[in-house]
Image (tube, rainbow, N blue to C red; front, side, top):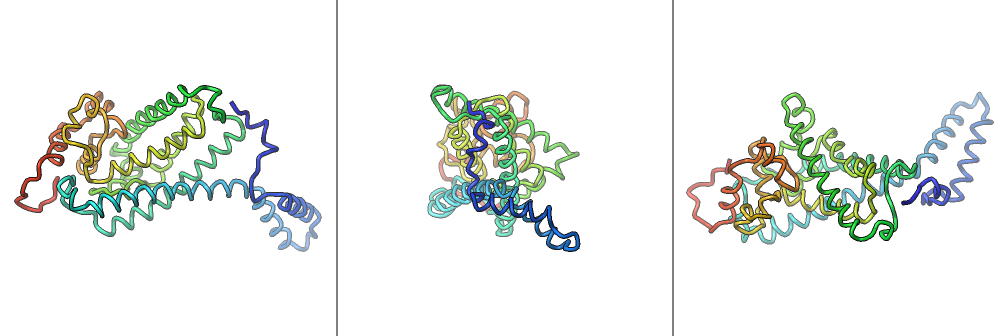
Length: 315
């Protein structure tokens, strides 16, 4: 396991090179010797010192913000282009709802995606800082724990996230806090791939800390975190797709019945209660929050195409 304290001096912060160090030292000397009468110069010098001290963290934040927005835009964009665009006629019978998201909802989702990515990046900076301090269990060499542990840690991370998500999600639906925490997400009654980042600030923060929490007790390799983050956004976007891509019978399959599908989560958006799980359905089944109409709804949208008597929304 890497002890970050041992390599602090060799950490390359990019923008802060020799010129940055020289400028920082110069600024500090100038601040210490500034004429008391020249308050403006002193204040400007102080702000420069602070900016130079924070620049490594600003660089990390900007990188994480860009990566968070990139994974969201790429995955949601590809799902939209492929399933809601190129294949929309072929998949029309597999839509969970006949109504379409209003155009205003897409703008709402994109605006909140910016704030969500901001919060995700900020928590990422905190995780980076704690890692540098040696307080989190990250390691760099896969051989240190072996390949079997690599796969095990990825599975445990997903399993822990599903448990954490179920209970926090269910808590967010409590009447005393729903309005302040989770209401923003449910403004998308008819979800779309872009709903994946539709979170208010508190909910975004709740979702953002998952890797930080797990890394306090479970050693994680960087590639495990990368795979987890990619897997998470793909699963999340598919859950909000509003089109069922899986084959008929999957919801009743001995294995498939334990996995959350697009239909499963779409019912949650329409009903506002039940089906709280993210990846797996076992917490819902165990705690009695599994929606009984799920299996029949899944069979309906994946079954043979039947003529519809009206265009009423599916509720």
